[in-house]
Length: 466
Ligand SMILES: *Cc1c(COP(=O)(O)O)cnc(C)c1O
Image 1 (cartoon, rainbow, N blue to C red):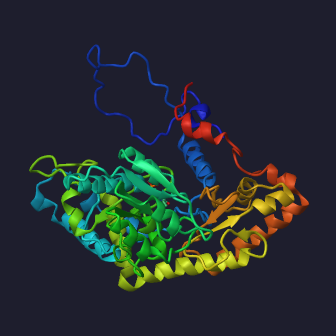
Image 2 (cartoon, helix red, strand yellow):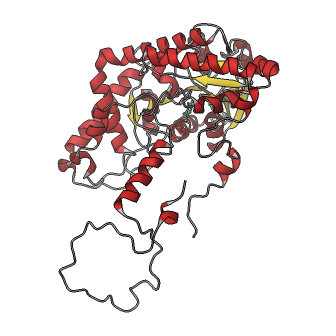
Image 3 (tube, protein in one colour):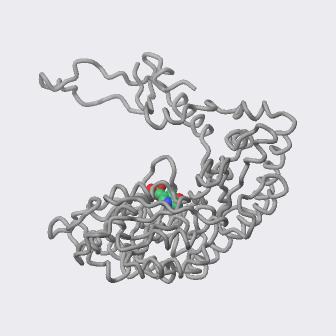
């Protein structure tokens, strides 16, 4: 598709402004541009069609099914967006006098109270801008806790091999040595492997529960007890809270410190790099180490981001919490789990789950046997789904499953959509046996099919050069 710059026709205009009726004034010497900027010249129809075409070429949750595992691409109710767009929330300045922004303060306080209640934490900061940023902040709390006690021997953070890549990256960024432990056969923490690495040098453990293969680790109380016994602290990666919110609390599982991805679990549109919020909660003994915000009284101590973070994302989350209410939050979690199990059962006859047992809000398919048999890879299946109007699942994650496809349907999909999705998977399964070449060449109906993903991520071309 051509860019607006390439569609430009010299002299073409949008005639929406009345003729200028004030005298033109020459700019003083030196202030004017030497050359006119190379702006596209187009009429309103061209522009409107250009953006409508662009809109048809992306896949969002408003276009169709989006089972991107671990990312919780649920439908985000419009009312939350309307709340976050209220002028009282958008037209404020972070240094506005306190008495003029009491409503905003009430939003932060109420959201904090609800989220502390849901997670079993004593306090929370909304400063971090994303999950990874929240992890970084949370692990720094753990570090400061040990240092404040003069316990300088604790140099290691334990991370299971199934963890999201941000977990070991965070531990390393905080100056810790990362100790990887292998998962047990069922994808959960191997207790013996954990015991073998615990010791006086353990600063803590980072864990998500349900874990990245969509299974709730039933040994969680024993796991957190063992870490505490060794003098370490337990960090909860809350990216998977959608499966358990309002049902069980990380605080009760024994975690000391957590982050939430408000943009995942609490319904802010995400993907494409939009604003997020990685709220960090902690038990009371860690409160002294939480970042403090800039206020009118001056800069806060230990800030990780300016002011109170992405405030509007918190408004969004609070609107979501208040619309669902005390009954709706656990119901959403239960429906997310129900939908995942329903879809897994329907797909099971063709593609095989990596762990054939009741899952939580997501499940992982293992396509290694299927690939051996047909030559069609998980990547080929993911790319073929695009031609059927479905966003691909997460691919090749977690690393402990080879040829992995990870599906998270979320609670906001109907039974009809799940039936359709299972049907598409069945069709592709058959197609792999009859026309594998079609799948090797997919997607066939998109602008680009198989970009060099590493280059696209490392050297994106984001600027038009005429
Ligand atoms: C998404 C995710 C993260 C990181 O969150 P971001 O907001 O993308 O930085 C961490 N852990 C898990 C399990 C996740 O799914």
